[in-house]
Length: 165
Image (cartoon, rainbow, N blue to C red; front, side, top):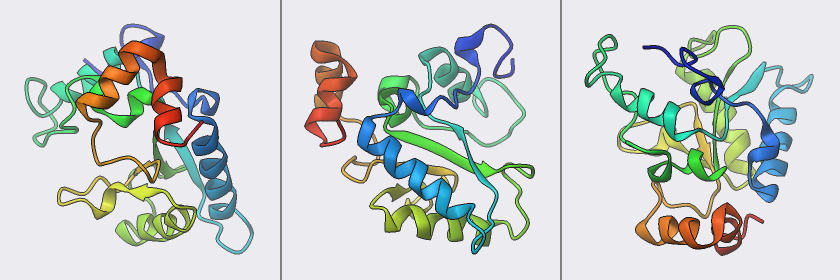
């Protein structure tokens, strides 16, 4: 089963309006800087907010759905990924996607720009996720407290608690 096979909820979502307001501003500024005449990195947000349906599809990859032979994510639901809160994006090359010219060096250039805006990069993790960027105040994964805030007050309560509203 591939992403996009069942419904719109199973397709990557590029709608930046679903991101926390302050995060969205920083993401857009970073993308603009990546793509200015000086940098010309041809970066784009491939995915921002992620539905639970799509998160479960990604989680199955490399576990019960093969190929790929490696796992795609360690988050089984969208409440265990900052994508489910509108606080994470995946950034790839506009035409080469996950295989840009320069490979990991391309992602490192993009990361320097995003990190200069105060965002965290998944490439710095012990199990790197080079396309992944998230709100700087976020721990690598959402906590039980974040899930409780989500359940009681929606994403706005989480955004407020993390200063991203």
